[in-house]
Length: 526
Image (cartoon, rainbow, N blue to C red; front, top):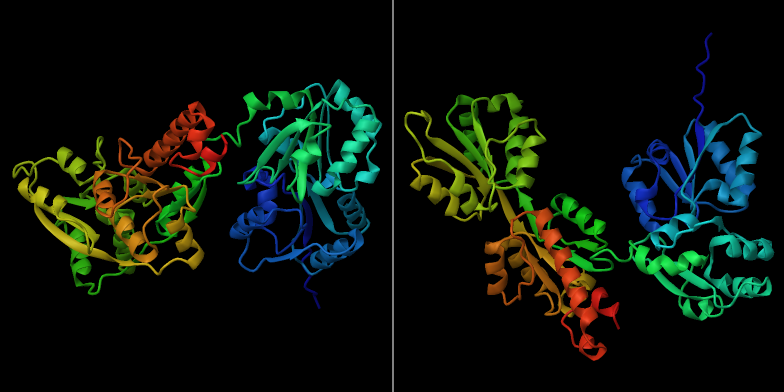
């Protein structure tokens, strides 16, 4: 009789880095995606855990590490013996923690398969994000127990180069006393950084004599940098000096649509808050779309014009229902109103024939759309699958150019449910530094479900139609890009923030207090 061999799981000790999910290594990412059980240290930021959970298996278990190193090792070993892949996720680098080293030693004494995945050390990683180089002979350490520090060695490191320590904020006074007692000059430059590599990272610079008072209010883990590198922070600080750093930006779009915009905002340092203002639903009667799909297959149309990503999705869903694919678009030309819509078409393996090179709007598309020619265009009909509330500009313009237009309702847009009370209050009280509107409907629906943004909130709109609607609702439009696209909209907001910061920097302190924006840009100069 042949016995079925029980599968053996693996154990991985994974370094999470200093906190920014983007600093996870590829190998760390692979280990986490493949994990059945993730045991995480309490020092791992919640934002990083959220990013990991979003990529992990649906049935993966996440539990905090509890007890002594031996207790954590037993949990990992038990999971591996049950055929599960287990990960201990730790802040910084695994071997930067004595407790994790003991866990690895315990696992190594068994037959379990294990690996240790390095991570960027908290001290060095945060120092780089704070703009503090560690030249010369450097010492960087993630300190768990301040009583184990050799202050004479640290003082020597400061004398020869630079020092970076990741420590608990409650230990700062002990470290100050230890450095001074070891002979470090009280005037030596010091930086203290809280929420290192996070959305609200903040660095204060002072001296050995005064850094405890300067860091008053810091809690949890902080990174202390000491030495000549601190003096270069004014020129090298980049994370906290991004154009939109610390700006809370309202993104009134559906979650599926907001991804690209939010990613770009984060790259500039903003903290996006996605608030769906519309929900997309199928048309009340599917007959129109059924006839349109049949017409596409039968060669009824010369062109299909897509005006939104939702329209692309609606047509492809109908194709899927009937077992059709991109091959059934053979002979039909495709036009898209903008790059985002064109990307959605390309995702299905088709390259659009026409995208406006100028203004990405109905008017921009009409300006480049050729009139119907009976000789060159034996088929003179255009399919226009759109929302139920679309304007008539495009259909009327095509008709004027001699085309027959089937203007079909591909989907309905309905007003989304109101956001939570705290978000509604923040919108009306100025809790958001900026709001980005990508269509007239987002303006109407946001005001309808949550109220009008406060007067000090910067209003950015994607194009002239959206600007008109915002003005109709009594909003002051501050930002409008030269081209109507999401990347250009975010770029324009970032440029506005830089311009605003330069103006604020040139103002006397008293005038800054009365300036329009009371958010991060203004506060930085008070």
